[in-house]
Length: 197
Image (spheres, rainbow, N blue to C red):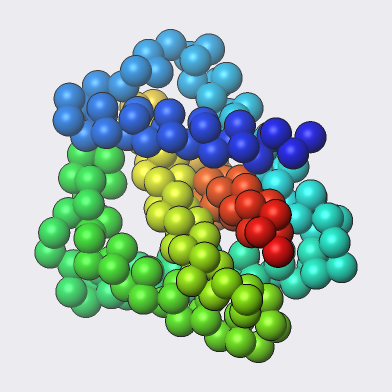
């Protein structure tokens, strides 16, 4: 079942194309309700499997899952505050006007710090620290895409929130949108990294 995270990565490459198309044209390629519903499968299923396989794959599994969660949370927080403080260049004005390239830069700086501290503290990735850092940076890049894609789906469905189960927080998907893309990418990178060891 290792192909599921890889399929997830392929889906997020397609999702990137969907976001770019909407940003350029103001229209979505997912025009029908069934297409939008079916898009939930490649978003959620590879994510679910990625976290399970990462957790159960080896004795470091729980540690790696916690690291991935912290990595994305820190990147999100850094993007929010750096974007709020210095943000002036819009990342995707039509899809999510509040996001900025300055916020992305803040997320990358925070990612580099967290990944470096984790690598030093745990010893994980110490043999190839640059490759491990690049996997983490790529993971955060895709986490931003996950956030943008969820915003795209809400925008094309004329919804402000993805649900009402978490009042004031935009719904469950707003809490996990970054992780839906980050999970498959990180696990695919982890499998590649472990293959090098």
